[in-house]
Length: 299
Length: 299
Image (cartoon, rainbow over all chains, first blue to last red; front, side):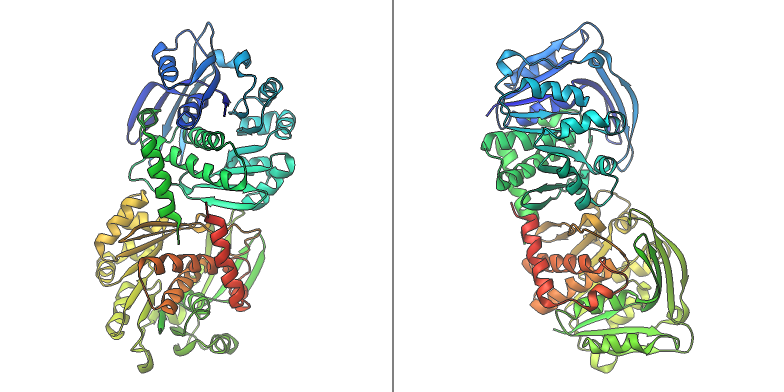
């Protein structure tokens, strides 16, 4: 099934206790698309500046990702810099330079208009709605958001939430969106805003899925080494949406399996800097890690 | 199978956003014993002062807990006061008055000496060893500890660790004990200190079991309301050890099921103040919550 992702494409400077990278490929669209393309055909929408290395776009295209929706505009690419602390749970944002991303206005190529599975990464909620207006054949839409939009553009965000099937956010965002730290209450409140399915990501503590069937708790995969948590949430979303699109189903069983595929992909992501681990995966490795989640959780 | 617990018996003052209690029954021995007696016969060792309400001991005895090992000494009972913050993850200790617990020297009644399952709650590691010397028929010993002993009596703690089968601690203690925040590395380091089985509790994020078979991740049960987290860890240990003693087995499958029973008991514990929720449970409620963990984790 066709899977569309709309969001940022970035060049990241990242420091962690395990090392550092500069001008590394990043952004929600890239993490999502590279994770999802192991499962299904992916169509990417985003914008880069005229400083963006051709090799990064070549890499995405070589992975079979449709990049017809990635525009190159005059100006600087979106750049983000961050530094992770010892525990890797906290980070400082060192800089955010929006560049051409500031005027991002997602326009879907004609060939994308029949996309059935849609992921709206973390962008202005009005832009997220612009995508929905174009993707008229959409069947299942999931979205992300962040504190900036929750606090600054709540009305537009509410309109977008009312039109999507799933919200994928982290626990701090769920708290901010609903005013409660109790995740059962928070998920119920979010479901009343529109999305029937709510996934609350908790980093190293895993993810919770709330849907019409109840609650599903997925652990994070216990890793020997975490080098760079950047992009783990978008990679999770890529595995999740990719697995759903591959299954061609969004029933309760498919949603649960998709959460595990998302968790598996996120666990690979953080093992190396940038998208480095995601570049080299085999389908066997992915299925093996999915199986490892059985072993991890069976009693 | 006979299950022995040695630890504190306290009168607690607790405040949380959900309310407050004063002089409420508390202490590791009580939480553990009341949780465990739903599974097996429990023998309790502890000390109380001459101010300790007879009704509390009567309650323990009425639940079928053997209280022959609970001594009453002249002086004040151990008292602890704490206040939980809005998120319930953080608490301030308002006071700790050791009273008669300061001179606690656990002596097992003759009738306890054949105990096969033993839980050494959080007391001085030398006292934990004193118990081991008496419990000569022990078959499976689990222990708890805390930052105070890890930092202050490391040598004695290492001696105790070398003699037990399982360590049940929280993530902050695992970090302090091993110097690493990575729980896979921490568990490996702890297993090299003696205990073949390591359980790391993570509060609302569940628990991880590390044993010779690998890693098992158990979620915490998502609750609508948490009123008082006091005693959840000891209640977890009570459910865990009670289930093992009932099964009469400590193989990998039994350990995993026992972790779920521990998690189920802890989830009940925090629903009310003090031991109030644990007082009124039925075996059907416990089995239903155990089953709910299947629903929560199956994919």
